[in-house]
Amino acid sequence: MSEIAAWHQVPGAPAPGSRLGLVDELADGAAALHALGDPAQPFRYILLRSGERIYAYVNRCAHFGVPLANKLEHLGVKPHSSIHCCVHYARYRWQDGYCEYGDCVGESLLAIPVSIVAGEILIAEQAK
Ligand code: FES
Image (cartoon, rainbow, N blue to C red):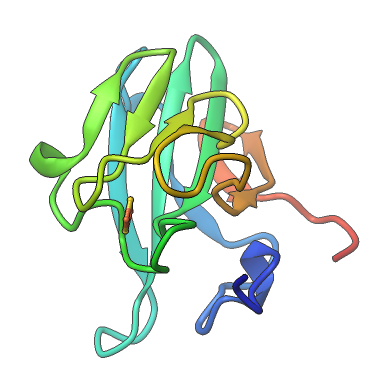
């Protein structure tokens, strides 16, 4: 089991309040891959949109701790339903990141709490 149990424990995790993107950059049912911070060891994350809801996860598979995909075209996306890792195809639920199929069934992606302020997706300010 990984020693990293929450998004803020990932190396390079940005502070609460940091901007992750713009709601309008993401179509309904779309996914996006982004990175922040040190290019040598970026903090990689995934944004998913369902209507006005935005879900954010660390781009780190619960199986081997590697990105689910480095390019969006390699990420498996079933809009509003699931995403899957391009390495061994673990499938995660869209709404909560729970792994429902694959080698890490029962584990979850590391969810990043978000708030939306004036169309900006921010890491929510909340107790760690
Ligand atoms: S690394 Fe993602 S399923 Fe194995």
